[in-house]
Amino acid sequence: MTHTLTESNLIHDPVEQFKRWYDEVKKLNIDMYDAMALATADESGAPSARMVLLKGFDHDGFVFYTNYNSVKAQEMAKNTSVCLLFYWKEVERQVRIWGSVEKISREESEAYFKTRPYDSQLGAWASEQSAIIPDRDYLVKRFEEKKKEYPEGKVPLPEFWGGYRVIPEVFEFWQGRPSRLHDRIKYTRKDDGWKVVRLAP
Image 1 (tube, rainbow, N blue to C red):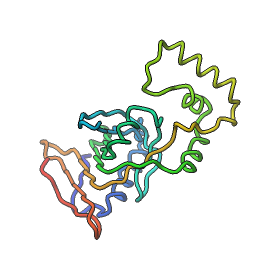
Image 2 (spheres, one colour):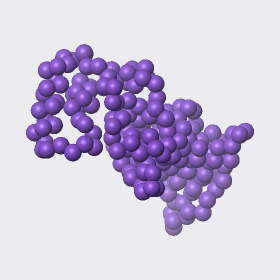
Image 3 (cartoon, rainbow, N blue to C red):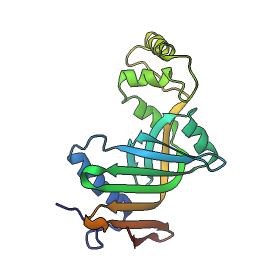
Image 4 (cartoon, one colour):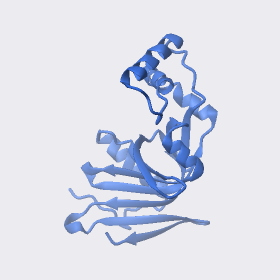
């Protein structure tokens, strides 16, 4: 059955509209439903994109975690404008979110870090993300060293690792339809709420 996105079934709060779609794909057990492309740009405007995982969202923004020394972190430190893209091909849906990014609190990052699997906690310490390394053995050796240094349940949050929150300013919801007559609904933040318009596909 073809899904639709019409003015009659639209939620006029984009975060709530996103939650509706997100909950639907989660219930369908779609693989990597929480994966999103994060687009950043350097000082010259050259773009860069990679996949990250959404770890939480509410009306304050959309949260993900990474190494604060990574290329993406360096770019976001100089240019806080970013874009997120979700794509769920099984239901022919995508969502683009434009906004500004900020670091979340150390306390929030620490609370999340404690929920990560032990090996993932060690991996955060072992990987000098985006740095040039001599070979894979170097990475494996660092992992084993950290495993000896930090027993399970005793891994501290690295100073160089934590979360970011994307504060949305614009949403675009895309619903695939037959004959390429897709639905595209755009929300733009205004002082008194959100302006909602339909775009040609």
